Image (cartoon, rainbow, N blue to C red; front, top):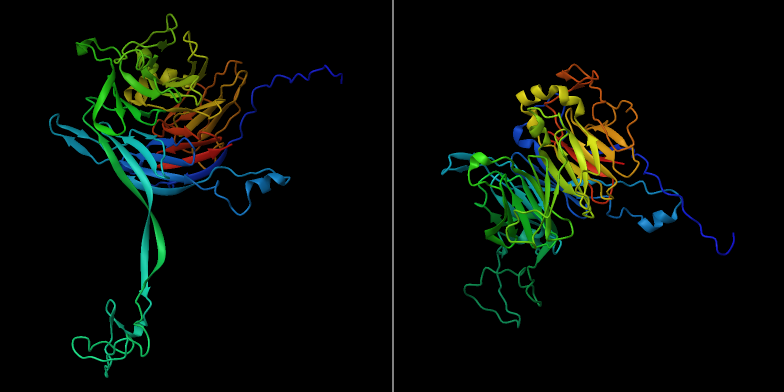
Length: 510
C-alpha cells in the first residue's frame, strides 16, 4: 500500500435482526388458574442504570426487581475477556421487595371512587444507595424512598446458661459468701450473689451481649404525597433530568412540581376551553426530554405531538413545534379520530426522536423534522375490518405502550393475544419480529412476507393454537381481544425487554 493511500471503510448496512430468547418469568400462571384483578400489572419501568425494574399493579402495589448477573461470580470480567470464548451472560433479575403504594379512596365531594391502580411509575435520581421513585394512581402522586436498613440481632450473654436465671440475674447458691474485690465480706441486700458471679480472687464476670447476625431489611418510606392538583385522571408523570422537578398530566392540564414541595404545583399547560362543549382534544401522554430540562412533549387524542420549551413563557399553551401527519383525503370515517389518538410517547435516549403509539401504528418522529414521521410501522392494520366490533367491546380504547432500545436502532410495542412486536428503525432495516409473552416466544411465528424498504410492519402474521377462536382476520389468522399486552419496557443499555401479560412479568433477551 502506498504511503498516501487511505483505507475507506465500506458503509455499514443495517444491523442484523436480533434472535430473541426467553429469559425469565415472575408470577407465571398455571394453566386454568384464575387471575385476580388486583394482581394485573399496570405499569413497568427500568431505572436509568438498568439495575432495577419496578412494576405497579391494579391492587396499588409496587414490586421492585434487582439485577443479579452483574455481581461477580468468582471470575472477573477481565479474566473472561482474556479467554477465547465470549461472555454469554445476559441480564438476570431477582425479586427485591414490594410495598403498598396506593389504597382505594372515596371522594365524598364528587361521590367518586378512586381506585388504587398504579397508572405510572417513574424512577428518580438515586442518592446514598437509596432508591427513589414516583408512583401515581388517578389522583395522587407519591414519592418513595427505598433503603436498606441493618437490624442487629443480639444473642446470648457470655454467661454459663445453666446458672443464669431470667434476663441477667444469677441462680443463688445454697451457701452464699459474698465478697468484694479487696477480699472483705459484707452482708445485706447483696446476699443472693453467688461465687459464680464474683469468682474467688477475680473480677466479676461481665455479661456482654454478642451480635450474632445483622439482617438487612428493605424499608420503603413515603417521603411526599402530591395530591389535590388534578380534576381529571392522571395519565402521565415524568421526572426531569435536573433531578429536582417532575410533571404530571391529566386530560386537560400539565402541572410542574418540585420534588421537595408537595403543597403547590405550577400549571404549565391548560387546554381546557372556556366552554366545555367546545372541547375537541385532550392530553393523552406527556414526557420530559431526557437531557434538556426545559423541554417536554405531550401527545393528544387528535394524533398530534407538541414540543414545548419552558423558557418561552410561564404558561406553555403555545408550542415550540407541532408534529402531526395530515389525514389522507377521502379516508375519513366514524373511527378516524378514535384510532388516531396517541396512547403513549417516548423520547429516544439521546432525545433526537420521539416514538408514538396510536391504535393502528407506531410512528417515529425526528424532532428536527415536523413535516411528518421519519418511519411508520403498521401494527393493527389487519383489524381495520373489525373496527365496529372493537368499538362495541371497547377494545378500540385500549392504551398500548411503546419503547425504544437504548441504541435507538429498534422499537417495540404490544398487541392482542399477548403478542408484541420488535421492529428495526435503522435506515434500510427490514427487521420485524412477532413474539408471544410465553416461555416459547417464537411458537406462533410464521414467515413474514418481504416488506417494503421503508420500515413498515404488520403484526397480523401470527397463528393461534388451541380451541380459542374468538375472531379471524383477513388472512385467516385468529386473535384474542381478552389477552392484551399493553405494558412493556426496554432495558436502557442491553437488548432485554420486560413485558406484562396479565399478572405475569416476562423477560426476553437477544
